Image 1 (cartoon, one colour):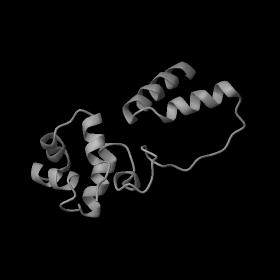
Image 2: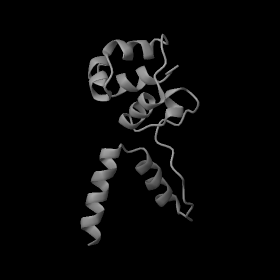
Image 3: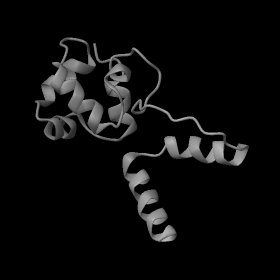
Image 4: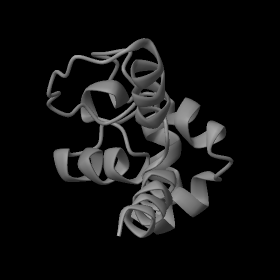
Length: 108
């Protein structure tokens, strides 16, 4: 059961057909995934998770964490630094790439 697929798709303003084309399945398959008529195989779940920058666990409803779950390195942060890190973690992959480009040019 892909509980959060429709939520992610509508949040990202993408049609079933567009998503189907991106991950290589039919529009009917996306419809069936969203309406709990069939379950995708693990490779399809991985493609969906990668496209939406989330985890398979979030897609199937095993966590409420809607972004990629990564290992975390602990630092002693002040309040401003902690807020900045929290905001960074909520950025999309594309936005994080922009930050990386900007900071690379700033610190060179």
